Image 1 (cartoon, rainbow over the protein chains, first blue to last red):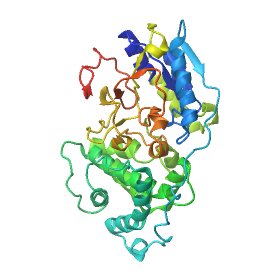
Image 2 (image 1 turned 45 degrees about the vertical axis):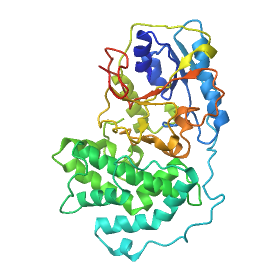
Image 3 (image 1 turned 30 degrees about the vertical axis):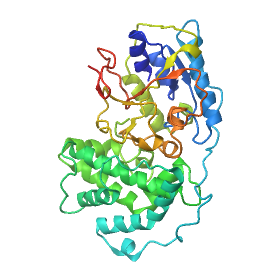
Image 4 (image 1 turned 180 degrees about the vertical axis):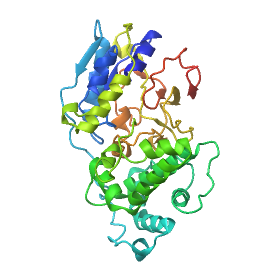
Length: 255
Length: 139
């Protein structure tokens, strides 16, 4: 954002910004910046707490009233805990806590394993969608079941042809993986337990069959002759925090 | 984000390395304007959010952008940011964690909000001209 601030001001447009990495902002010296001590991905602090979000918004807009700059300012408060609920209010529990099916335990076929797990999560995903009235699944543009089949085929002997020839191999696989991860995150967010961001990551990468398959997929991507697949495997599939803990990973250069 | 001192060493070093790669700016532009309540405002984000009907952002961050009209419903927004290293549960729960007021309309609007350009990470390359199309690249 700091670079964009410079470019816009050069074109005659006043800017103010939220900074999430203070050290980067100090180096790039944008005209106006409000540093906030919130996690990456949450520039307004916490979901579901509009009063706090508005406080941040007002603080960053107020920087436009400064008489001279550059203006670096620190937001004085840490983010409150999420204001979200677990989605259970007003809804009956859609399913029992079914244990993984025998298919998930016994099958070695990635497609069978993935689809069986997703079928078990489907009622929770449906509940989450009803509660929010929206879903973040859909980047690939194909049904989530087809996305799962496409991913699973990469782990087998014969990969399915791409579902969108306009994308590179890595991009197509990335979009399908993003959809599966969104499906899982939305499903688990509707379950009792109210997992936070860290908890959702740990659940996906440690406790689910999908997470285990994605770790295998990473290795396949890294070994691929396709550069976009290599890029995906090295830095855009497994989070750094997971790579440094459960995945025994590498230190890729990534965003 | 959380203070670097509170992060594991590998994460701290990664972010410091990104800072070493960042461009430096010697010019100090300072644009002023009307009183805040009289201004038109657009939110620019590097979160990689766009409408479901837009083409997802390219794999490698660059200078492309998407524009989100102010009347876009929150259910129409998806995120194709390539990074897997930031929280997405906030976006899942509440779009306003990225763009307070645009989707919810619960801000009293002292200013006029314009359509909302959105980028993905590290749009560091300087543009030659201002935005000149609704969805595309800097030209």
